Length: 225
Image (cartoon, rainbow, N blue to C red; front, side):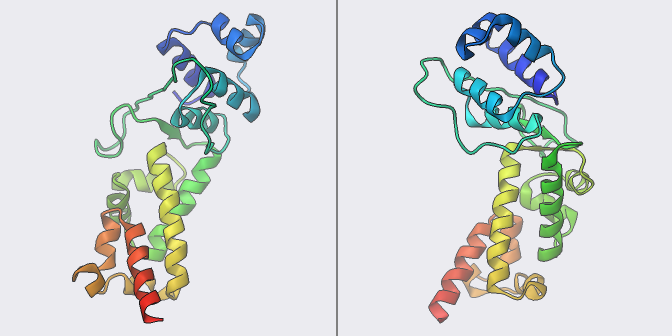
C-alpha cells in the first residue's frame, strides 16, 4: 500500500473503525469524511495530524501517513490525553532480501516521494565519504546491496527505522568530517587503532556503530588537546 488513502483505509479496517466513528472523533460530518477518503488528492499536513491526534496514533504510524502524503515525518506523537486505545499500522511488503526489513515493517515507498531524494543523497554521501561499496553500506544499515543500489536510483522502499538510521549516520559523518580532512577520512577509518581495541574504525561502522566511532575519536582528540 503506497498511498495515504490506502494506508488510512487499512488502518481503519484493521481496527474496526467506521467512517461514522472517525467523523465523530475529528468533529466532521460523515459526508465530509467519505469525500476525504474517496479523494485522490492528499489532505493537508495539519489535517493528517488532526486525524492522528483524534485516533491517538503512535509515532511510526503518523510518520507512515505523512510520508505517504509527501510530507516529512513528524517528531511528535499524538496527544496523550485521549481515552482511545493507540492505533498502529503495520504494512509488509516483499523486499529483495529477507534481511532487508523485518516482517510487517512500515515501509516508505520512494518513487515520486520527496523522501527518496534524501535517502539517495545520504546513501551516496556515506558511500563516497567513507569509501564504502554498496555491499558494505548495506551491511552497515542491515539491508541488501540491491536495496542500496535501488535507493541511489531513487527507487525501492525503506523502513522508518532504517530512515532514522540513515539520518543518524549522516549526522555522525558530519562530526567525523569536522575531526578529519574529508579526503583523508576513508584512509583514517581503515587504520587499526588502540582506541578500537586493535580493530579499525570501519569495522565498527560496518556493524552499524558509526556513532560509537565518533564518540571514541572525540574522546581521544579531547584528551590530546
